[in-house]
Length: 180
Image (cartoon, rainbow, N blue to C red):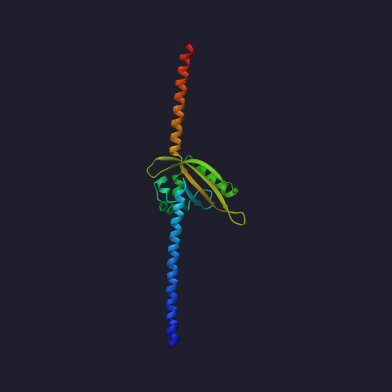
């Protein structure tokens, strides 16, 4: 009888131990997930992972994707076609070709294109992607980073305008000084 009691208690403690280990594993996984997102948040752009398809179907985003698109990562991940629709229609063919080359030839890419945010505004991004290979040399995924360059582009245009104004001013003034 006492052996049955001991076995019962051992089974009970064993199950408690298993549950405690499972809880610890879930806690550790949550900590790792948070750490990953903190690291991804430290990157200037939005890191992503995508399966090797001809058209980009993003499967993992940094949480900052909402700042870029107006959509949460969960919304984009729930609708596999949403990311494709965010890419400006005039740029889709070039973006799809870059992904196809990456998948089929294992060639990294860097491409600038436009996305249409949830609020309807258009932003310029640079997407840098590279293939990840398995031990057989096959592309298993594409990892990349998308960086919003809209503000940079606005600043570049502003600098170009200012340079033209300065050049125009210098040309006008050089003519005045030459005549004197």
